[in-house]
Image 1 (cartoon, helix red, strand yellow):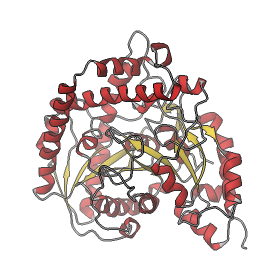
Image 2 (tube, rainbow, N blue to C red; image 1 turned 60 degrees about the vertical axis):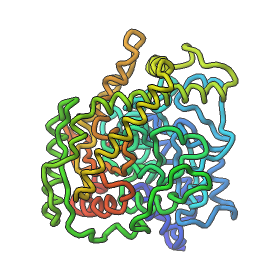
Image 3 (cartoon, rainbow, N blue to C red; image 1 turned 180 degrees about the vertical axis):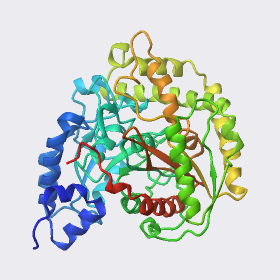
Amino acid sequence: MTETPAPDELAHLDAVGLAQRIAQGDLSPVECIQATIDRIEVNNETLNAVIHKQYEQALELAASPELPDGPFRGVPMLIKDLWAEEAGQPHHFGAQALKDANFTGTTDANMVQRYKEAGFINVGRTNTPELGTVATTEPLAYGPTRNPWNPEYGTGGSSGGAAAAVASGMVPAANASDGGGSIRIPAAMCGLVGLKPSRGRISMGPREEWGLGVQHVVSHTMRDTAAIMDATAIPFLGDGVVAPDFGRPYAGQVGSNPGPLRIGIWNEHSMTAVHPDCAAATMQAAQLLESMGHQVSESHPQALDEMHAMAEAFNATWAVGSVMGLEYLSEQLGRPITQDDIEPTNWGLSSQGKSISAIDYAKAQAAMGAFRRSVLTWWEDGFDLLLTPTTAVPPPKIGELTASEDDPVRASRRSLPYAVFTSPFNTTGQPAISLPTGQSDGLPVGVQIVGAYGREDLLIAVGAQLEEAVNWSARRAAIHA
């Protein structure tokens, strides 16, 4: 065996790189997991990214002959403490009531099962806002997760714990989920790659199949984003939606030439002002894409300028989803959830959801379907990709997006500028990726690229082109292992 890489070198390797070192015998799974634990212990007290630690179990699995021989054998993974349940592990949804009850999962979610089959070793679970409903990770149950670039600032939500863990070098990639921007927003705020796959690309079973959410990872590199999707985007029996395949294996799209593509720009929004630094990042990315031979023009689906009706339908679906979330918590606790159990934002949101009739909910679904068809005609008319800011504004300071007793909707209201460019594509089900190409006062800001339904292959190919030009993974946060 060759000399074990130094800990700081391991902190800069991506998941594919770690897997290669392990496969070559340069590093054992036990050494890899122990180094990961050491890195978490160094930075987690400051960042509060990892809220449940599975160290003993992880080391035991790393040393076991039962460790699956998948493509990521021995590589560490962190699971977001929201919908990705793992049997026998804490599962609290950011909720104080489940924390107080010491609730643990009873089964492995399909996503967790795929991670294990791939050889990943789960070392813990990451912080998330209660029920994942706002664009900041500051739950009352576990406290705020801080941005490794500047701990006075937030990491976004709802995958903020995952993003802080990856951006600080604790792990190379971490599980994340996205129902309105919750992969892409934290990726933008923490300088990471965040791909929201097409609806039906990765199984959401067996529990969360009624919402707008999808799951994948946040990472530093396009090759991690692609290779982990190759390992996990495998349907399960009974999945209600399975996205069509284009361009597999996705890892093969990294470094490929997608040819000259027709790319539109959407850099203004009718519902909020766009910060100059976010708009500038979009235009800089557009110039880079043009220099690569792509045709870039000021064009976007007209339906995106008429979003108020869609926003009402989305909000109705979001509110009903909050009711479903509370029903699930009640099921786990064995008693009804009360106002004392839940944060003001989610109590108010669920109260709104309970007032929505079945007919109005059905109308909201119909309105979202009409919006989806209208948006997708733009791709049918000859465009390949849409370029936007990921968020309309740079990262907020800790406390700016939280609710209060006298203003329970403040968190939702102040989250709006962070989700206006991301949430439409949860409605349409299209794949969208945030790429860390910009900065604002030393903090990362991202650009979003959206593909037609099922066309993650184009996002990965073009994302890899931008990665080569920008070399964002060479830039690391101030707080880094």
